[in-house]
Picture 1 (spheres, rainbow, N blue to C red):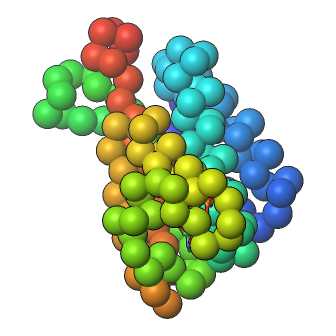
Picture 2 (picture 1 turned 180 degrees about the vertical axis):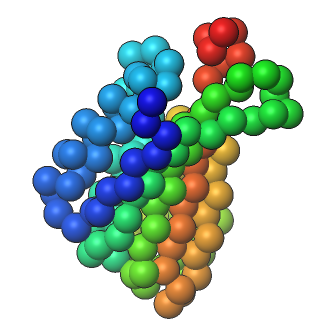
Length: 142
Ligand SMILES: Nc1ncnc2c1ncn2[C@@H]1O[C@H](COP(=O)(O)OP(=O)(O)OP(=O)(O)O)[C@@H](O)[C@H]1O
Ligand SMILES: [Mg+2]
């Protein structure tokens, strides 16, 4: 079983590939089709942000386990990393409705709604690392 996937994001084709690989990986971990599609959406939003604001970066998908949540609690963790300009006001960007590119500004807030845990490490001139994890329900993983 594949435990981790590492992808480069530098073109629109890479975003398409990230969606495909992400959906396959989520299904392989046991996520039902609707959840796999949601995870795919989060992956696509993070990949699109890399392309739009940093031009290139990497996307890591990883199987994770949480011992505190009981035996066999499995999740999928996304790590989107770039060395672009960074986000000056992370809190505002996470709230939604904030965009420096004249768009809707719903990408990051959407990722927060879809995923169970989201962490953004960023700052002007420092690049950006977004980690986002979704857990499989304990019952579904049995
Ligand atoms: N990887 C990144 N590097 C630098 N800035 C970013 C990055 N990701 C997001 N941002 C900043 O955070 C803002 C909000 O991001 P978000 O994805 O929510 O909205 P958007 O990309 O502007 O629009 P949408 O995703 O709705 O098309 C962006 O406008 C941009 O200023
Ligand atoms: Mg966006």
